[in-house]
Image (cartoon, rainbow, N blue to C red; front, side, top):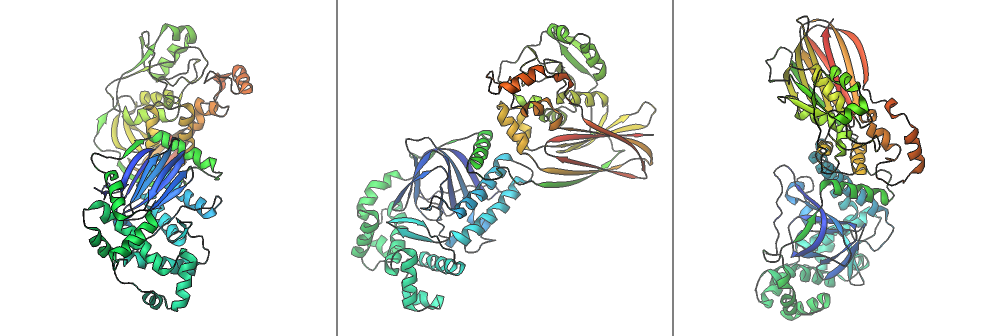
Length: 598
């Protein structure tokens, strides 16, 4: 079927893909589609024109324009963004009449660069899955359409190729856009130059020269061009007679239709049907796109953005404010685990000695002597980052029993092993250590409130008064996947570095009035060995001495002295009925507030 129906999610009027285009047969759809080539090149057919698009090129397919994509000898990566006209017409009523052309014959074009910035912002929001990314994408698409309307809703034909019209006068841009839109909307009817001149309040003479100067052809030729272009749908999607197609397209005679079809397409309508009807998208001739994983898409988008010399490849910083009311006397939702076991090997005892017992004592854990089996899979470097404690506290807070290896196996270097454990091979505390320390303090407590970004635990105090542990954590879908995906050090670092959103979480805790001691602990990526190593370019990690100076520094560095402790503070507060506890977290991180009656 020549017409492709685009299926959108109920709450998201966009369809976005990034991957290698192998073949997308001839088709059309009612919605707007933007093709952004990120690497390599592709061949694109639109109407009678055939383009070779290289990295950095943007092409827009408007509704009811037949087009096809295919690969060349060069591998490619393309982003394809499809926009629901039905949804965005609420903001832009004339969207169905658009005639966007974004392919330019110019190499250096500031408007093209601005267009690419808008597209990359949408793509990065979508693949990073940050807070409210759908809302942000929709907002950015509105900006994109507004920009397209302002500068790209018109075109010219130069050397028989269709390009965006370069024009700076906003009055002229608006006028040419209206004229083009009117012709395409009414192409099948009888349209005269006098009709359009009256609509635009111009003389016929002036209008005739205006169309020729900007569209690159006379009014009559432009009208016939639009009619021939639109007739291709019926020609390829039906077996109607050529005479009927000519009449439906607005031509007075079949001979006239054949003349102009031959002029633009280079052969007769009958020959066109014979050549291309078998190349239409169908169940036996499906589209072939190899989609990229989200992490790879982010890497390409970010590097492409930097490669173009843009000042900032990261998505805009978003600020989320959340208020949660918590009843401190509410019944328990569930209980926290009472037992924690550390897996300690002979190698751990040899390297750490009595520190094994000291760690077990601090964590209140029993020691399970075993020969810990080293995972055979690829390293998951998220376990060395701030993502690890967030992952554990969100997913294992109420596990029946917790069991964790004490230490990464192997030699002290490389420092980062990408394994699930509490200490590096040399005994440096990883962020995960502090998550299990918190769990040990909350052992046997009651979970009384939880959500995507918070948890509140109530634990009976030693003197009968409850102790409250309020936990706030900030993350997004990309950060969440760091502990379940085998990404490289640099991809992991890029996700953490680029997640700059800010969370303002306010927990309004209703508890008995009195004087309380408030202890606050904050653990951010800056506290982690991973962050310290990233500052040196990850020496001794790849097996290659890419940075000899950093290698020498690391070998001499007393890594056990690196600061991995959470920042902390203590104060006395007076509570009457409700304690409003605020957590402000920039980027990925977690904070813990402990409230205990003084």
